[in-house]
Amino acid sequence: MKKLVCILIILFSLPIYGQQKGDTIISNNPSNLKLKVLYFHVTNRCATCRSIEANVRKTLNDYFLNKIELGAIDFYVVNCELPENKELAKKYEAYGATLALTSYNNGKEAWTEDLTNWAFQKAHDSEVFVSELKTKIEAYIN
Image (cartoon, rainbow, N blue to C red; front, side, top):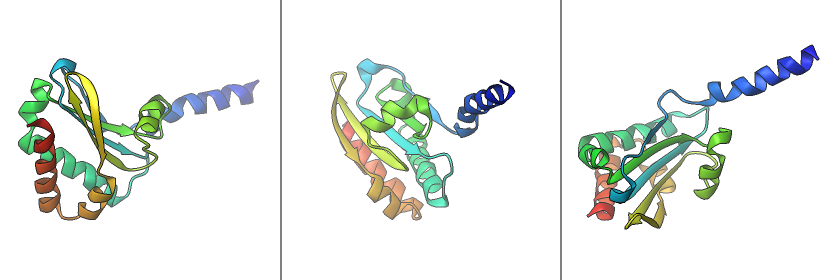
């Protein structure tokens, strides 16, 4: 019995340690939504994965903060290994670091673009990453 209690305590405490401090979900006004920016990661991340997230955050903070505040852009940083994120990760086929842009038209999901390969190629050149992501986001929201 004592062993069972210890196992249960460990199992229920694992999600606490898996959640990253910087995980974010910013979702404001579904009726205004034009784009969801989703970055999925695993619990233990490499420098490249952290760089991708930093570049996405920089792009959104530098160029699209007003669009986030208005609800035109939602931003998600999600640990795909956590049980509570299982369905979202499955929907986007995110089983590791994944960057996706999902466009919305009249409140309905229209199109998803998987930018994972692109993000890994550009991750270590912040200037190029930010510039190109800015252009991609502008194409979705304009």
